[in-house]
Image (cartoon, protein in one colour):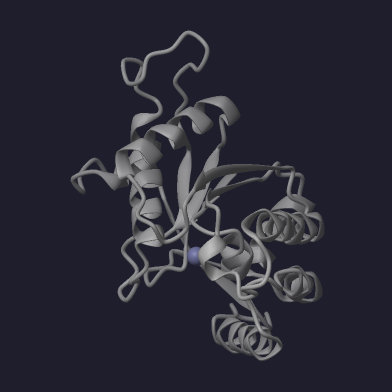
Length: 227
Ligand SMILES: [Zn+2]
């Protein structure tokens, strides 16, 4: 799985429990982070290089808990405007290099999403998924076409699956505790309690917690026909 997130903590906030279960089951999951995330760092006294070091260290610590296999950073400036087509082409190249069965990203059609890093990432990744298998698109000797089996959207209003994450709650929340640079103690406590509340409300029958994802075949991502 290639898990493409706008910011360094989105994958883990949205669905660390699902990712833990996948990694435990033997999946190779690579995190791709689109922006440098500097806009959200709270401490104004540290310089950008130190902030970057902290962000990377926090993400790697969370990734160790989740079981992530690798990390890619695309380095776009946080909250400064993404170029959708340029980002799409970067993601196509990553898809062709990693050759994932599933690509995870944020749902660009979430009803009240106001952050353009999220909407543009979701759209760019979606388009990359439908183009990466076309042999004449970005033709290259080195990176050959690859068809993705499914795209999975987190932060979605329209889930198609709810994953039972009851058994991995400790690690799900331990991963979140790694992310300190952008949260006050109170903010992090609110995140834990808010996620616990909604994930209890989403729990499938017989479970205590669940995470919601919209999983689609790539052919569903263009003009709405084709079964
Ligand atoms: Zn984000």
